[in-house]
Length: 464
Ligand SMILES: [Zn+2]
Image (tube, rainbow, N blue to C red):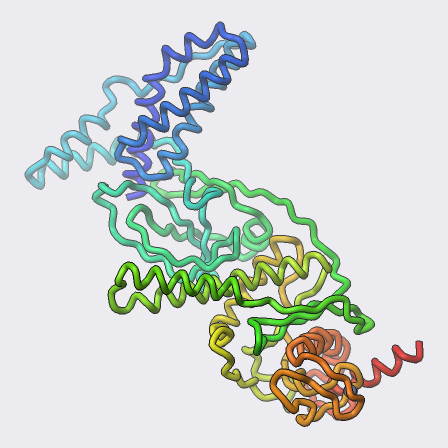
């Protein structure tokens, strides 16, 4: 299937190149401005012509660029006085077209076998040109990673009418450029598994932004040559941004520094998401979706929530150079006294962020933070963060007389419960970084508990 796509593109390339030869020769004596304009015109014409070719989107997007590049480098070479010949198609006795004709016309198995053999013989001696993989999305090739860490490329190889056009489902893969979770169904390509070492992945793919790529066929193997752009500079974090899954809103956050000083706090509200949900529901009703499709739509909505939230978190973290800290839902223990945290049901809107979605958020955040040069989120056990006073360290269930408000029974500190918990989540990372190594594997003594650390820290900061 991949070879078929490459051969089709290869043939289309030569057809186009032959057709523009005269046009390009006429340009040799023209001035630069005219040449540039004419070459653009040639590219446009190629695009137009290609719409009728039985090719995939990649070829249709990549070939005009190839044609343009070929023509302009030819003109440049001639103009600087170098010898250059207009590239010619393979010899007229090229057996490939005839073999292809024979294959489509074959009726008996023997005819078909002979034609197939002629085609493969051709492939051994004269391999097709590399095929550009573009138009996977707005910015080029889509590299995907599954939950087992395996790497794939989506390659859009053929058109609607191709005999290879069969539905392919891509589900729950992570787009390595955007960090987005990708779910889609298409008949126009295939998912190509790639062999890539962990080292290569971390060194090149993760920090880079993949642009385009070229599919190359060499001696029976397929390779994908990718181009990456690296823009990121690592940011040294000097603040901590804690996230609490909210009750009123989707999530609340607090940015603090090493001295536990609050720099900023706020909530990621859900109104835009509500709007999105309403639209989705309206669209679903309007098209009278078949049974079972509502779940897909719901998942799309949930994914959208995760991404929107992640984008907002990254934005805040970036502006404060923050280490993002989130609740660890997956951890079994951070010490013998810790139990696996319970996932409390939330309001209509925020229950979207169920355990699975929340874990997805952690993954998506890691990618998106990395893309701007920030470290992946740190995880902390959230136990006690909603009932321990961030101002004085007093821990008591009674501090939470209501769901919405935190009021310390000891010092009287009063605050919105979500915003308050976010501060504790950020502070808990500072705490665990200091205390964790001392108590590793041991039962956590009282003096090492978060509330004691917090109290001592607050008192010391007051003195200084
Ligand atoms: Zn207090």
